[in-house]
Length: 82
Image (cartoon, rainbow, N blue to C red; front, side, top):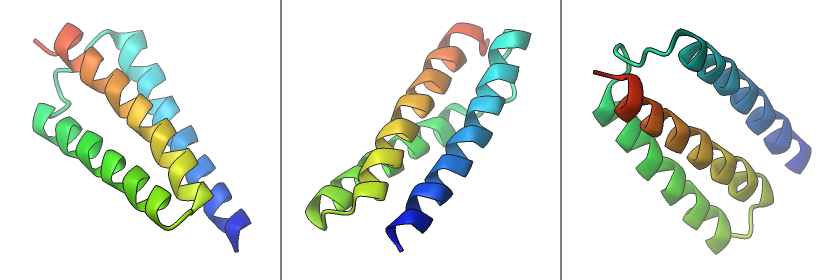
C-alpha cells in the first residue's frame, strides 16, 4: 500500500510543478490567492508532522516536497502578484 501513497504524491507534485512552470513563464501571480497559498503551506506542514508521528514515509516525503513548492508559489505571489 505504501507504493500507492508514493504514486499519489508523485502525480500531485507533477501537476503542481506544471502550474509553477506556467506561473514563472508568465511572470504573473495576480490570480493566485495569498490566503490560499498560506493555508496550503500550513496544511502541508501539518501533514509532515502527522507523517512523522505515525512514521508514514510517503506523507513525509511528498508533503515536504509540496511545502517547498507552496513556498515557491508564496515567493512568486510576493514578487509577481501585484
